[in-house]
Length: 249
Length: 278
Ligand SMILES: Nc1ncnc2c1ncn2[C@@H]1O[C@H](COP(=O)(O)OP(=O)(O)O)[C@@H](O)[C@H]1O
Ligand SMILES: [Mg+2]
Image (tube, rainbow over all chains, first blue to last red; front, top):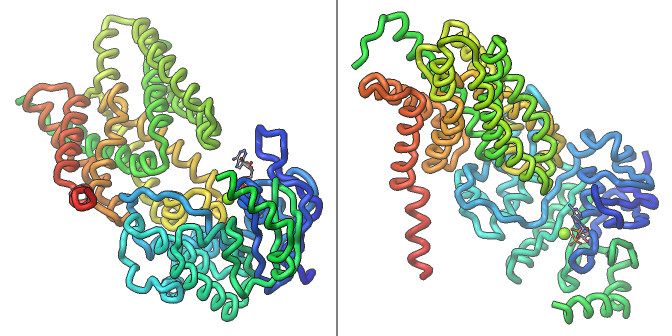
C-alpha cells in the first residue's frame, strides 16, 4: 500500500451525454492524515472531483486509486470507509425521519447486508451527535432543523461511519460567521482526535480552516494551483480568479 | 345489505385485508422515492395486461404481472437517471396502456364479456379466489421480511439515494426490487379494486400516514393499517350501499386522506409558523 490515500492520474470526468469534461487532466495525490481544501468558483468542478473520488461519477480517462484500490473496480468497498457530506440540499420540512435515524444511516453500508444495528452502533451514533454538538436532537424530525443544524447532523452521519477519509462539500455554505468558526473548530478537533484525512471543498476564499495546510485551486475543471496555504493566499492569480467571480455576481 | 355465504364473506374480507396491506405498504416506497408516475403507469399496464389475458384466454393475473414488469423495465432505467425523456415516455405509455386495455376489453370472447370487462375495470370482490389469497399472502410475507431484513438500507435510500450510494449500498438493486414488488401488488389487487383505481390504494393510505408522523417506523406501520382499514370500510360500504367495491374503497381512502390533511398536526404547526412570519 502506498502512503497516498488518494491518487488521481490524468483523470477526466465527462458527465453522461456531455462532450466537455467537467474535470480535466486531474493529477492529485493526498497523503494519509492530510487536511486539504479545494477552492474554486461555482461550476469549477469541485463537486465532480469529490464524486469522482468516491466513485459516484465514474471517471472517463486516467487512473484513480483510493486506499491503494482502483476506484471504479472497488467503489462499493472503498465507499464504506469514505464519509461524504454532500453539498447543501433542501430537505422536505415534513420528511419522516428522526435525526438519530439519519445519523445511523451513515453506518448502514458498513454494518453490511443481513445484519442489524447493534448497541455499539447506536453508541457511536450518540457519541458522534455529541461531538458535533447535537446531543439533544436525537428524536427531532430532520426537516425541522436550521441549515447549520442540518449540516451538523450530516457531518455526524458521515462520522458515525468511522471513515478513514472525509469528503466535505461546502460545509460552511449555510452557516453564519460564528457558526463557521464553530464548524472550523469542530473539523480541527475531528482531524486531531480521529486521525481522519479530510478533503474539503469551498468556493469561499475567505474561509479556509487554519488547520488546513494545503490548498488546491480548481478553475474550469482544471487544477491550476496546488500549494501551501500561505503561497496560495498571497498569489496574484487567485485574486484575479475570485475577483472575476465576484464582479460577475 | 347483500347477504353472503360465510365462505365467500371470509374470502372477501381476507382479500380486502391483504390487498390493502400490500398496496399501502408499497405506497410508502412509491411516494417517498418519487415513483408515483411510474407506479401509475405500471398499474395501468397491469390493467391492460389483465384485459389482454382475458382476450386471448390466458391467465389474466400472469399477463397483468408481465405487462407491469415490462413497463418497469422500460421506465425504471429512464426514471432512475431523472432523464427529461422519462416524463415523455411515461405520458406515452400511460395513454397507450389505457387505449390498449379498452381495445382488449372490446374483444373479450363469450357472452359474459361485458361482465368480465366491467369486473377488471371496477373491481369485484367475488372474483377474488383462493389462489389470489395465497399469492397475496405470499407477497405480504415477502414484504414484511424485505422490510425487516433491509430496514437500515431502506431508511438510508428513502432519506437520500445518493448518500446511500456513497456509503456503499447497492441502491439500484433496491430501486428495482421496489418497482417489481409494486408490479406484484397492483397486479394481485387488480381484481378486487379494479384497473382504474388500484393506484389510489397505493397512494392514499400512505399520504394519510405522512400527515401524522415524523418517524419512518411509524409510517411504515401505520400506512398498511390505514390501507387495511380503508379496504374493510370500503368493503362494508359496497355491501351496504351496493357500490362497486373498488370505487367504495377508493372513496373511503380519499375521505380518510382529506380528513387527515385537515387535522394533520404537521400542517397545523406549519400554518401557525407562517402566520407568525407574516
Ligand atoms: N449531472 C450533470 N450533468 C452534466 N453536467 C453537469 C452535471 N453536474 C455538474 N455538471 C457540470 O459540471 C461542471 C462542474 O460542476 P460542479 O462539479 O458541480 O461544480 P462546483 O461544485 O465547483 O460548483 C459545471 O459546468 C456543471 O454545469
Ligand atoms: Mg459544488
